[in-house]
Amino acid sequence: MGTLVAVSVAAALCLQYLVETALVGLNIRHAGRGRGVPEQMESWCDEAAADRSRAYVKANGWLTVARNTWDLAVILALVFSGVLPLLDRSLSAVGLRGPHLFVAFLGVVTVFHVLTSAPVAAFQTFVIEQRFGFNHTTPRVWISDKLKSLALVGVFGVPFLYAVHAIVTRSGRLWWVWLFGLMAAFQVFLLWLWPTFIAPLFNKFHPLPEGDLKDRLDGMASAAGFHNRGLFVMDASRRSGHSNAWFAGLFRPRIVLFDTFLAQTSPDEAAAVLAHEIGHFKRSHVKLRLLWSLAGTLGMLWVLSLLVPWRPLYVTFGFASPSLHAATALVTLVGGAFVFWMTPLGAWLSRRHEYEADQFAMDLSGQPEALASSLVRLHQSNLSNLDPHPWFSAWHYSHPAIVDRLAAIAREEARIARRASDERESMRYEAGDR
Image (cartoon, rainbow, N blue to C red; front, side):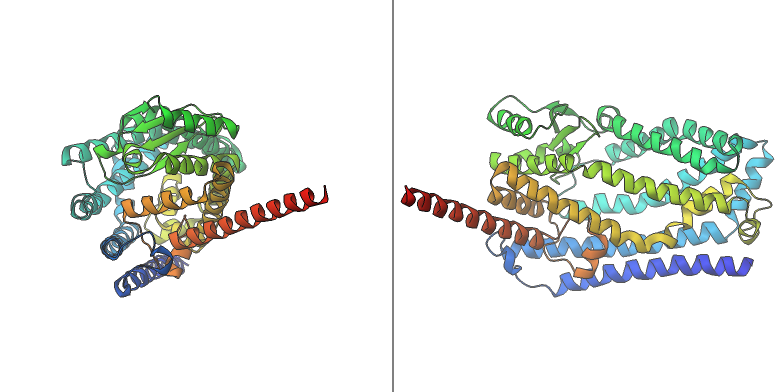
């Protein structure tokens, strides 16, 4: 049984690596073979910008291949080298038991993961992002951000893990159901806490200054019945040249605009992007995605409840006896390899939400051309892939490819034009009758 478990885990990890890396390879080759400007983008983009975008795609693609390879090597080493059982014995030897052993074991594994992922993250920031002119951060700020992130994990993660251990050990056979309730509440709590407490630890936020743009955006939000906690500008340029806008919150969200975004867009384009974000809220996309995430969490906890008492799992990987911390670490490290095939389903759902938000934005703003130009401007300023390989985008893209979004907007523009023409014809007909 132990051999079968080991082979199954190794095969799942390797299959995930091969599929993910093959898709990245297809996307890199597709970008390398690209020439000129995609037909749908000819009126928006020149050849030099398209070539620069392809170069950025290829650089990040090769880094992804390196990251996938490194992550696979680290996970295989952790799972099959015996280092996890050694860590278990070492912590037990210094007197840690029960919840303290649970928290310490998972804490060490988490810190190890952060340290092993840091070199690739640093290379992306200080080599690739620097090469393409996006990086505005310094090593000091970058390290400070990493330390802040670790501190937040400690502040919130340690009490949470103690609560997890208490629920599992004291709530009987259905502990995983009770634990799901705790995790759902914790996730909602973090969604509420993020914009007001956590995000300001990394960036400065100030209200959008008074003026025509603020009046226009406030008026649009009011007309849509979008009750929010205000429009804020984030100093994104302190760390990066990338441009974006987002909102956070379940009931009365904050709207956040990057300062880089405001510097690059016209008032019409800013209004179109805000209308798109309002569309996400009015169509309950955030809540639907939260439910999707919670469904995955519930399924994972059910699987964990089956594995915790399953002795072959521990024998296979060298643990002396079943334990919650060992099962949690193993499921966290290798569980993704058994469900990675669901990635395209989540991506498809997200792309569908983006189309719905685009439709809402066009209905609200009445300016499809402004939405199209804002999307193009965002893609150009971020060097986003103008023409991804269809298999790669179907598997990974949470947003539709820009050519597909522009085509959808063009269809909507044509529909609006036909409707306006029909209305004028109807008015002329009625006038003739009279």
